[in-house]
Length: 385
Image (tube, rainbow, N blue to C red):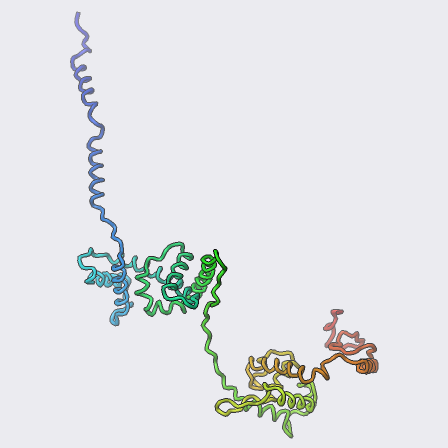
């Protein structure tokens, strides 16, 4: 009997060959290539260079010198500008033997320095405002670091760069250019002082934020001309305006007004006409009293008499204050008092004679019912109050 034709020695050899090749690791070449790629990548990667204080100072010097270049300055493209700075930076003898830095690295580092130094300038200005008696420069600098940390939640590590830039014109004008940020830093300084001294007694600096005062503008008003005009209009022998105009505009007769002017000029130091250091006469008593009367009579602002009487707004307010105080002091006992029974009866008789029985005095009678009211005034006083 013949053997089975399907059983062959080749089948056994094939099975044996599969068992021998099973010990060979799968994808051996791919794994080896991956390990080699990682080794080459780690070996080819460069270490990140940190910026030392010397590097920062040389970079600042390069930027300042390049900006102040009279031939080029800032009138150039950004790429060319930073390439010149990088070349200037690499040529510095302080960095001899160091690896060359790219222009993009210098640009990024400078922007970081500029941002942090500008913020610290605001903190330092706020600390200077909060400086109290007995503190030196080190105390102010320490407080500036505390304010910076309070505002930005990180420490300021570029003090060497700030010392290089603080005397430059750009950073010297920082306090005037960014007042809002400095005021904010100043408020943080006050809060910080409360925190620092909160364990013992509460401490607040008496010095408030310094505000730049505007220069006071001097206006030559020619006060002599104002006095001459006032005299010719009302007080000369032949005045421009007669007595009825004076009574309407001053709310009193001319003799009474001149009596008040005489008493004030003799007994109140403020209303006396004086001379300045150059011998020039100041404002006259008539100008001062007239300005106060006009403000009281018409209820207008203090600067409305400037064009006619040649008095400034603040001077008119002073005249009004001294006028009221002088009237109370000189005429208070006789006139500024409660009316007697005789005076009350006289006022009642006058009111009854004019058709208003029981009336002592009135400031505004327009609410009295009027049967034949003028057509032009119709509905103007109909509130019923």
